[in-house]
Length: 356
Image (cartoon, rainbow, N blue to C red; front, side):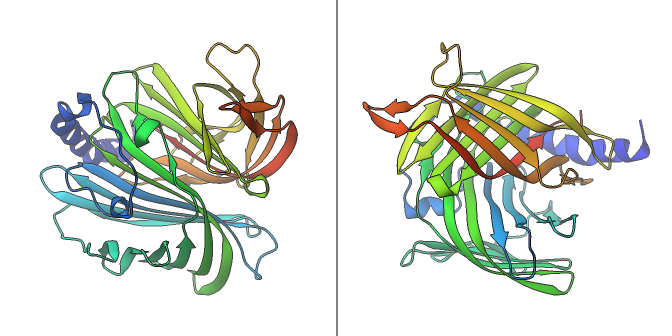
């Protein structure tokens, strides 16, 4: 074991175990369904963990290829309330992945009011109810982000926004997605200003759920030209896997109960962790179906999009392409939902828990 692994273990494992101890009872209480309102953009003080997670696929006149952006605000409450901010840029044309962040493991109050969702040291998320939009501003060591995102759709992950996290009954979180926010603004990357436009996928998740020894894979497939968005989530805790997801189109949501993922390649990260990449995904209409109704091939635009930290668990988070095919037409509630078609788009993939 290297010195870095020993130090990282000491810095990360104790806080995670402390969090686990504090949610042990709460994580097994069932959650009532909710209807997402504008108030739910703001912090839920009764939750011990909450995050506002943005992944954008953007274009700029200064690049011929897309630019990917990830910005995440984490709020974690144990003995103190901690705030963590991550930001990462995938510059496809420059073949460069840049990430930075801020970790404040002590109790420094953050701002939250009628317009400010969360703000700390010049980094903020704001909500404007009049225009139904979110604004993101970050200033983190050479990376600046200033974006305005218009909310168009809200997709509940799970019935009533209750997302099961694993096979243990009651271990769940509240989870809502805004998959297609129209976005414009600017990114400053190492002194270069990039005016950008595009679409942002926003996940807002909160609750009291287990995170110790949990591995998860998250796929967001964005087939914007067809108004089709797919979210797939695999949770693996102590070798037991639980998967779920949604297919969202024209304001309608189809629940995914079964899907299969197979990777054909490996990315070896800077810290030596192996992450599976180049995925083939097969999505089934029901848990009993023998053949998939949809397949998707997801491939990173850059292979090395891994984030490493001494304070936080390491993870792979990357901008990808997706080539999908609806193999058979699908009806939803007795009406046509998906037609047989070949689809191309973009995706973001997150892989967490592989460092163990």
